Amino acid sequence: MIDTSRIEAMVSQLKAAAARAQGNVAPVESITGGEKPATRVDFASVLKNSLDEVNASQEKSKKMSEAFAMGDDNINLSDVMIAMQKSSISFQTSIQVRNKLVSAYRDIMTMQV
Picture 1 (cartoon, helix red, strand yellow):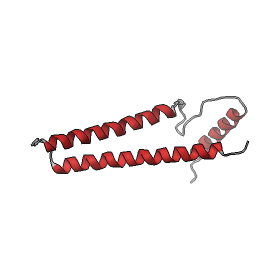
Picture 2 (cartoon, one colour):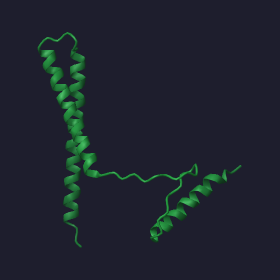
Picture 3 (cartoon, rainbow, N blue to C red):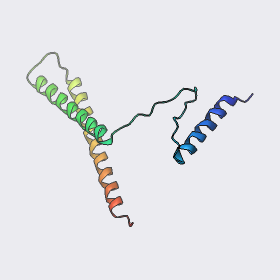
């Protein structure tokens, strides 16, 4: 037996998208039939939050390694190494994101209009 409610929901979403494309903005209904509020995401704030998280991770690993070097019994070597690896991975990821952004910027700047 075919479930027609999902098909009808998809058709209503397509109709709403077509109406928005023509300038008639209508809220998109979810599969359950309720209205889904649109959320705005600012790219700059997302990027800043990510960089803040990387910085916090690096600060945490630095403090843990300093505490371990000073002889704090509450800090294990394995915890220090895990924190350092997490901060290293997050830093390397941020570098790769930066490289991709620079590459995309260069591609856009070399496009002919």
